[in-house]
Image (cartoon, rainbow, N blue to C red; front, side, top):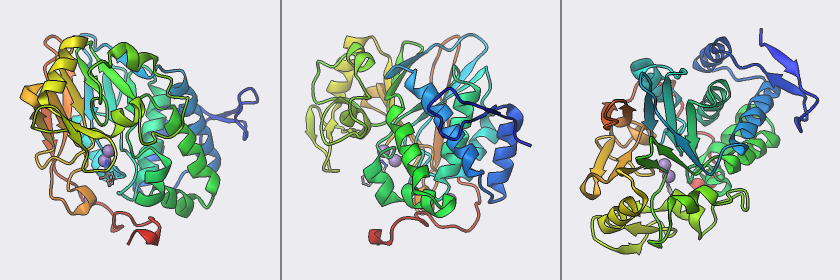
Length: 332
Ligand SMILES: O=C(O)c1nn[nH]c1-c1ccccc1
Ligand SMILES: [Mn+2]
Ligand SMILES: [Mn+2]
Ligand SMILES: [Mn+2]
């Protein structure tokens, strides 16, 4: 049975606090694999507890990887829960010495977004100093209304409050993570100005606006894309911009970085080293939307040399529920 306590202190309306243990996580994974859901009152407690952990984190989290530990950086997972479990089965489950960083876009498109969000949140509560999550552009209301997550929350949990609480938690997510002082990990990419520094990101008040909007530092961190040509140009997405290898080189030089690790775009091989190796795209949703035929990838980083170890993997079978199964029909 679930180990819970009653929490009358925090703003936690249902006063339940889940004691997240390894056993709790294993039980939740088994339930989700069997197509079952979490009891809504435990969902509220989990999302609220994770939100409180995120709120206490800086906008740019700084992570050192000690000898004997490894950090695995994953890109977009987009509701592909069975492919996420395959990463843990293949590469090792999160633990105090096996750190993980999920680089945004864990919901929408795939039809097990709530399962992925709840699993990542349970690990954040269980291992707050070795399990990390960056916000992606899909951790936002506009995208979730169009690309399936809001619909999935309503369909599975029969309540409008569930999505609203997830939305609050997305607004608390950090926007970037600095890995071992040498890799800046963020979902989209770099900026319209060369003047942005790590200090600017660290002190950026991510709580000033809940949604990324159409301009500003948060939007650019979640939406921009690399381009092969030098300079900057308009984004094909209609929001954000594209930036060239010179922009990446100047940013890394000015901020003492070895490379930028970002996600946000599919790569057929699961990852791609771009901008003369100073920018890497990593994407962890194989055969994206059950149609793209791409591999997934993740990156391991460990002492003593902290070089990037690239790993690729293929999609695994999943129950016969199509991508976007719960998206509003307006999308067709
Ligand atoms: O849904 C995606 O594949 C995606 N991942 N990051 N950004 C997008 C996106 C953005 C705008 C329109 C369509 C897809
Ligand atoms: Mn994405
Ligand atoms: Mn994205
Ligand atoms: Mn699939």
